[in-house]
Amino acid sequence: MRLISSRKIRDGVELARDIVAGPPGTAPLLRAGVKLSSRYADLLPKAGVGSVWIEDELGADIEISEPLTPETRAKVHKGVSGALTAANTALRSGSGMPREVVESLGDVAESMVNDLLDCPEAALALDDLNAFDDYTHKHSVQVTLLGLLIARRAWQTDGWIDYRGRRRFDRIDDRMRKLGLGLLVHDVGKLAVPPEILNKPGRLTDAEMEIMKTHAVAGVELLRPADLSPLSLSVVRDHHERLDGSGYPEGLFGAQVQEFPRIAAVADVYDAVTSERVYKPAAPPHVGVKVIRSGSGGQFCPNIVRHFRAVVMPYPVGHEVTLADGRVGVVSGVSIDDPDSPTVRVLGSAGVEELVVDMTAERVAAA
Ligand SMILES: [Fe+2]
Image (cartoon, rainbow, N blue to C red; front, side, top):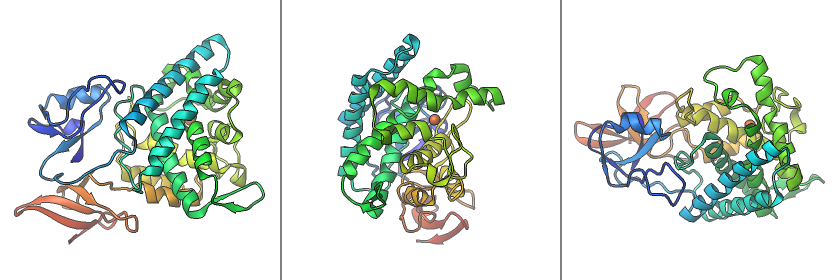
């Protein structure tokens, strides 16, 4: 199978995976195996489905695994929807989020962690969460998945440093759960930001930006009654802090930014760049990777970026790439050691051929 932009759907294209535009458990909008017509090129983007997995000659034998089991996906959806509803109610009544809602999100985080720990692959398809209905919901889940993948690799490879400065390899699961919970609620304070600012097409004015920036502290306030661990809470409060001091709300600098928000910052920015919004189309993964790479050592922690680069491929398997000569191909293989040189399938005069393509130099070499 391979992934194409919904806008590129032509008559007769075969769908490789169900398209679910509502909560898990509801009937899919379209089922795997169905032949699409070109009118979906118009309809699906309007339904928030920016890309679809299709089956054709170029994508034959390419298998993409899903990071979460269907049970976990359903649990995540229910938990995050419930939390967002509870947060809205809490905002209206001026109270905080009920402790039991946040505790149930802890179970959700745990299920996600368990799925990921069972899944040996380093690089996963993250762009397959069309099932989640609104942006804050979808963004929260995707950032959580990506943050957990980065953390898993970072801690399993390098361990983590405790408050005494000792490097440790124990209690990684527990840290993953705390990080997952923080990531799931990292943007909950956005519910306190007026929707016209949150969804404004184009640039925010300075005054609007100041309102937008309140979401980090608003999130901490909302979560106060829930008694979150300080590690989880650091994600909510500091995920917009940057190592070079350019972030908010405090403008923290260097070591003042803890490890959890460092991970959250990378996952959050990558997802924002590569997500479709009302005011912008999704940028491809290599653009998201470039943004993170160029911020390494400035805004972002170089060590976290190093692990990010091992879990997020700029040219992921199943994605389309355009070669220097204008031909469009599909990535059929990629290596962590040289992620900028994927193996690409193209349709040539002799049928399907595979090439190793150095995407940075745009040189094409026969495989
Ligand atoms: Fe945020």
